[in-house]
Image (cartoon, rainbow, N blue to C red; front, side, top):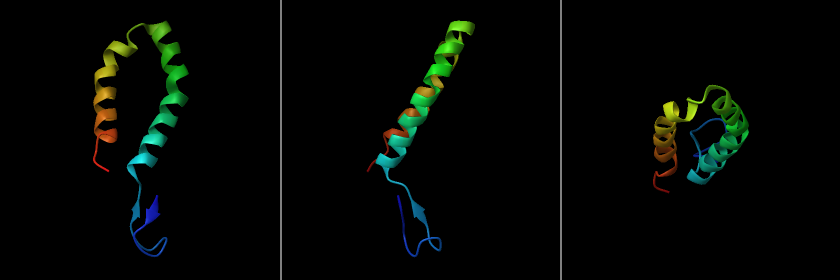
Length: 64
């Protein structure tokens, strides 16, 4: 994470590693909620997994 120029006055950039680490953190944080919902509803994974996988691939498979 950094600035292209003077901090607060130019563009901010995020590295692929930073985004991947944040993505993993969010996945860990929401995993217990997903598991509880799967147990209660039984349809959560089947309904949303393909869309979630596509989003994950698009974020994490971009070039360095």
